[in-house]
Length: 474
Image (cartoon, rainbow, N blue to C red):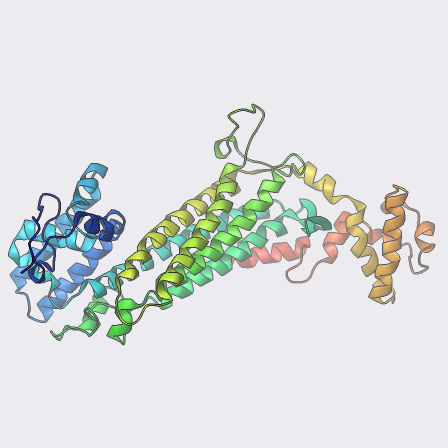
């Protein structure tokens, strides 16, 4: 018989599997395997699932009505206490329990006695964790969708006030054609709308109850999984116990949607970081949402936007972490799956913060309209409109493009804006230019011509905002 190591119960209380082992957990191994410091975040969902499981045990006559009442009362008391716990309380508990699930079970037994030990009947931590994660994702995804909707509402409010504010649109970071500031803002709205759709769609695949799958083969007590599903608000139950306990698709799907959301927020941040620069000066950020320099007194830095841009890589890393964890796992449960929670929780906190900050910035940013309008009035931005004008006169576009290219070259060489030229000068390049040219050769005229669905004309944008407001109604 192997020598038994002294079991230091002041640091590590008994484990759920101590009957099989003759030695206490090595302290280094215990620290390495514990997840309590981060999976404590699941405690409201663990208690919610445990209450439903208790009710299921009572329906199966594995608990008396009195035992059911006692266990549920104990669980609710633990939940209330945990909401009030201080950081020092949490730190001290992390040396007692391997994870949040064993912590709640230990506390339950301390409160209600040995009857608390009946709670785990017909349940493994494997299906327990799977349930907790689905409950967590269901609740937190809904909150993320609400935050996206709030940001979208701010965008629409600002856009509606800036329909007739124009600025250059860019391709390759070069000025291209004039657009409405409202049109630019609503581009972000559409990105967020797709993000919201991905998060909403992911909820469909969360809607099956995993509880009852046991460790991997199901439970032996005839528990009514459908009744448990109804009690917890699921539309159905998972179909295969092996798959159920090792499935983390929902977490990966959430991290994927979060990565795309952060990519969109990062692109938006990059635009506004450029716009806040002296070279652009299209926006002024509020002091309360900016930082200064420890050395240069004049500096006003867009640090929050830079952090959103930087944290995007962090969220990408979370997605790659879990994809890598999952790629080689055989059926069924493996302890590698413990590595799903830190990336998930970190990503959830990151996107919440980023969405709140972007909403504050959207609400409070000052648009430097004069600067935008001055830049938009550069006649070179109307070059495409000149070519389009010639097309309406019957000239093939490729030839029109060549004609206007020569006009642009001369304007640049002679430092003579072509919008100031008389008609005769235009006709030296092409006789198809007529007096109606000057109706097109204006900023407002160029904007108004983009009147199709999805265009930047005032008419198109107003119509789009009307549609958006209907979509945003609760």
